Amino acid sequence: MTKIFIIGDLHFPYHNKKALRKVYKAARKEKPTIFVQIGDLKDQYWASRFTKKNIGTSISEIQKARRISLQFWQTLRKICPKAKCYQLLGNHDIRLIKRIAEKVPEAYEIVKEKLDELYTFPGVKTVYDDRAEIEINGIIFMHGFRSRLGDHAKYNGKSTVCGHSHVGGVVFEQRQKRIIWELNAGYLADETAEPLKYRPQTTSKWTLGYGLITWKAGIPIPCFIPLR
Image 1 (cartoon, rainbow, N blue to C red):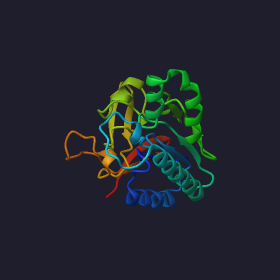
Image 2 (cartoon, one colour):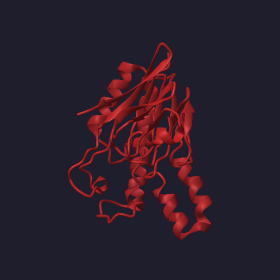
Image 3 (cartoon, rainbow, N blue to C red):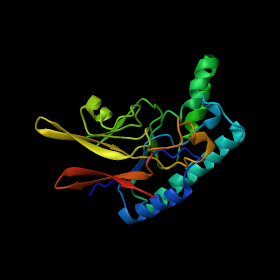
Image 4 (cartoon, helix red, strand yellow):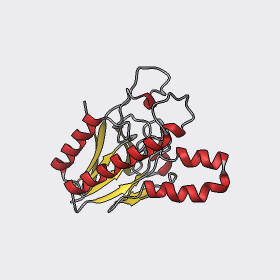
């Protein structure tokens, strides 16, 4: 039976270590047949447009994020060796390539090739175009770019799984004789880390957690599981 485990925005190396350990524990319990990391695997803080404080070099962040992301996928594949694994890219993942395109467009193709290598993992299918979505069992999976829960499903006209807003949840909509829904997988980053302090105020509605889709009588059941 298909069971899809969705991991939300991690922002390596600025992830919530406690929450990630709970995700690994949940994966061992659920034994999913599919893992999907929904994008913003890495933060790329040094390439952001926000005012930055000196918390390290670009090279150190790239190397640390790469090491942790390799460990992340190695751990999931060890937990469920037969599970299919998918890696999507989000808006934070492409910060570097966007800066290159703006300032040195001539180097775009060379840098893009190297960037793709940083998101390549053994046994994992990576979707290198952040605008692209994948479809699994009639469900759309995408990082997303809208903040209101349900807007991606409305646009797609299909049940959709996304991330991006860091606000987990599920919303359903009746469409004539069928129901579509949207599942946001929340986030697993450390909101106290300097790179995650870009919010306009300290109060946050961000929700730690992960997504899970199971099937009952052939019908997909989407769930957001909050973590503390």
